[in-house]
Amino acid sequence: MARLQALSSQYAHRVDVLPTSPFPLASSLPVQPTQQPRLRIYLEGDGHAWATSRQPSLDPSPRHLLMAQLALSDPRPSVYLARPCQFVSAAGCTTNLWTDQRFSSAVLDSLDQALDRLKQRYGNRDFELVGYSGGAALALLLAARRDDIAQVQTLAGNLSPRLWAEALALSPLQGSLDPLDQAQRLARVPQRHLLGQADRSVPASLYPTYRQALGPRAVCVQSVSLPEVGHEQGWGEAWQRWRDQPLDCASD
Image (cartoon, one colour):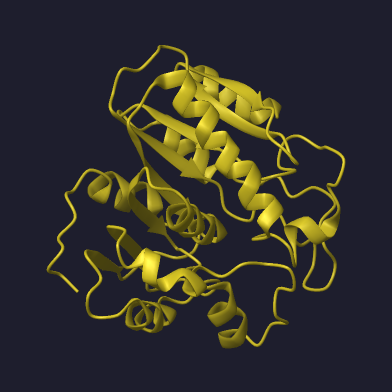
């Protein structure tokens, strides 16, 4: 938490713990109130979920504050939102929550309540969700659940945990939800997916299957291929270029 607090203080943000249920969520919020009709929310990735390939981490907090850095350096009013058990522990914070159940209903419930609290605090009309890695799956699940998500952007996004596990020959995530089970609703959500072609953790080659599942009548789904961007490398420059570009709904 100290690292997140130090970073936040550099960008006129403050760390707050949102008392959502079943898991409180660490966040970094603008110190100055915002009157913008749309609030951009940056959803953290899976963090340090695994200590080794077979041993879950005891603390899923991200070691590299990539997503927090992108959020806090954004000139638009933006909020950084961590995942359950990152930076702050609580009852129920067991290793299952950041491994098999990282996209569970309980996780989604806490994030959903966090958006409600932020909306009450800032009075915004709607949200833009920006999801990194596993945070992309949760951004899409929130967009399928809520009616105030104006658009979703993802970076190195795990758009379907089911497809991802199959492609990497991993065990299925028992107890997790999958955005593609809500494909009909997601087809109505404007979205852009930034794909790192050098990403070995979430291969860009998974995107076409996700796009096909949304169907030909999807309102606006755009992808951007980034040739030299990996899972953690190259996102600062790429995001600065694309974050405020209007979606090109005819690109896919």
